[in-house]
Image (cartoon, rainbow, N blue to C red; front, side, top):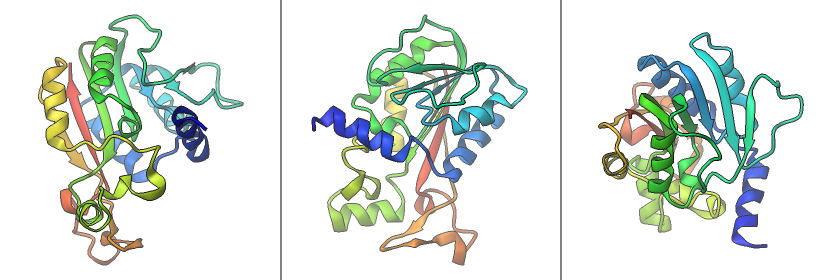
Length: 222
C-alpha cells in the first residue's frame, strides 16, 4: 500500500468525522465573526457539519470538498467536490465569503500551499475559520517528552496526521500568504496525559485554555 493509499484508507476509516468540541469551537468562531454568504467546507468528511451549516440562515449556499465521495442520500442542494485537498481545487478565484476547515490541515502535506489556496478562493474581506490539534497543551507536551512527538501525532495517528502546527506557525503562514493577523481560541476540552479516558474538565471544569484543550481554532480575514 502506497503512502497516498494509506492516507485515503485512514480517511475512510474515520470517515472524516471530528469530535463535537471541534465543531462547537468552529461554530462559535463563525458566529463571533459574523460569517455568512457562500461557504466552503474544506474537508467535509461525511458532511455532518455541512448539514448543520446549511441549516443556518446566514449561509446562502454551502459547498463541500473532500477526498471522500459524496455520502449517499446527501442533499443535492449542497455541492460536493471529490478531490485531493493537497492540490488546488477546480474552482474560480474569489468565489467564497467564508471557508471553514475542521481538523483537516494536520492531514495535508503543505500548509502554506493550502493557505494560498484559501486566499485564492476567498473574496476580499472573506473569513477563514480553521481548527487543528493543540500542540501546546499539557497532554501534547507529555507526548513530545515521553513519546517523541506531540500527542495527536503518535502511534496510530500516523500517517493520517502529518503536519503539526503551533499558533506561531499559523501566524507566520497567514502573514506569508496575504491574510490579516489571526485570532486564536481553544476548545476547552482536553484529555489527561496517560489517562486519556478522563478529561480535565470532569474534575475541574474551570480548566480551559491552552494547557487544557486538545484542539484550538483560528479565525482570520483575507
